[in-house]
Amino acid sequence: MEDKNMNNLIEESFEYPEDLAHVERRLEMRILKEKRKKRAFVSFISSVAAAVMFIVLVNTSTAFAGIVAELPLIGTIAEYVKFDKSLKSAIENDYIQQTGLIAYDGSEKLLLPYVIADEKNLVLFFKLPDDFELSEGQWAGISLTSIEDGSSGEKVEGFGYSSSNISWQESKSKGLILQHYNFSEGFLPQSIKINVALIRETYQDQSDEKTNNVDEFSALEDEKYPLAEEVGNFSFNIEFNEFAKPIDYEFNQEHTIMGQKITLKEMKVYPTGTEVSFEFSKDNSAWIKGLDLAVEKEGNEMYSGRSGISSTYDETNNHMKVYIQSDYFAEPKEQKLVIKGIRLLEKDKEFITVDLKRGTISPEVEGMQLSKVSRRGQKADLTFSTHISNDEMFGLFVSKYTDIEGNPYEIKSEGSSSRDSVMETYLTVEYPESGVVILQRSLTPKVFLKEPIKIPLPLK
Image (cartoon, rainbow, N blue to C red; front, side):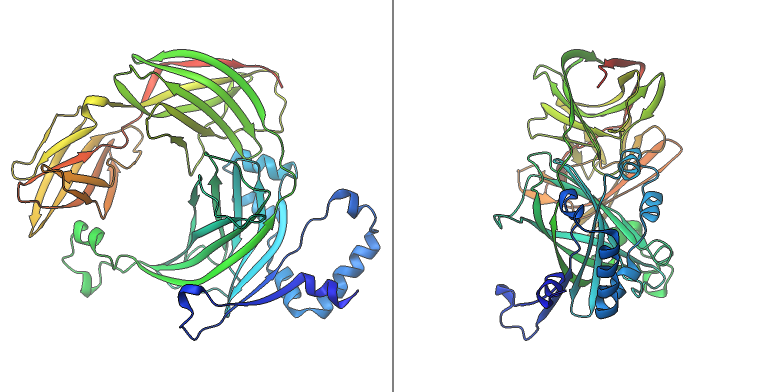
């Protein structure tokens, strides 16, 4: 094997960020990239030759041998996503790409062994190195810095993402962090560079002497909770295999739910899940803030909402995409799309006025009350109680709010807890001179339909 080919597997570069040119620190990045070859190319390499190449690499490259030792098996990945039927099915049907990527920031490293991707979704399986340490009370997470188009170098936008994290109890047994990206406003490029930061968070023990007599509000508000440490910044260049084409269903069916008109536009089934698009009448008296969907296969409910991003909607609240699990690879004899529940926010009660002095809200909202107001200097701590089902929790308010004069503020912290079908929401606001703030409601409790709407799906 030529030295040039070996060098193509292990690349070293040295970068000085323009904004940090004055800092005497050199960032060393090493990225090992094992591309999956196209089938036409692999067919020319015998299994013996491939084995020889692998042995040569392991014997001549200590870095490569160490990386191979840390890569999790496909079985481990399948176990990790066993509660997501879409991803589980994708793996079982070999719709997963092994990248073998590893990136370094100085002595710190992060692995990206596997990805699952289609034109609208990207699922990344990050792995912490075997020697990564977490102490009791610590968590590890990954924060996105940016995504760049691998061909043009332009920043990719128009997406949202969710990310799991790992506690100190899980770090030795699991070591995997899953991120799910949804490109609701565009498409995933065939080649990307993704830049992320590995974060170590420490949650201080509130039983400690330093935190005695600290109430729930000051703990939420205090920026020292949790303590976040940036372990390193890492970049990965990913070339995706050809994306599978979605299975399209077009409907343009109008339905009425609790007096609100909705139009089911279309449904797209991808290997990573299903995207269902709706439009809402501008004449509706309420904003539709969520729809509970499922797919019923041959009389049994098989696929429901997925974790992470469950829906997206535009600023006008007239369009929504709802994401659920599905099996792209199955061929059932009969399927139905089921609308089981809805979240409604009455338009004339989207904004509520809170009188901090009197402890009242206007207009009154059925099922929600301001149960506590306490003043701390220039701040006020609020507790809202909301009747819910199944102890679900959700964000009750938009982060931005105003006082009675229209001066803007931002909620710095919002916490919640639920018990016995009641969710309590805790937040801290500035105490304006007028003693009045105006909050914008975000989400509402889910209401389940007595008679779910069932819509037959044509066979593939």
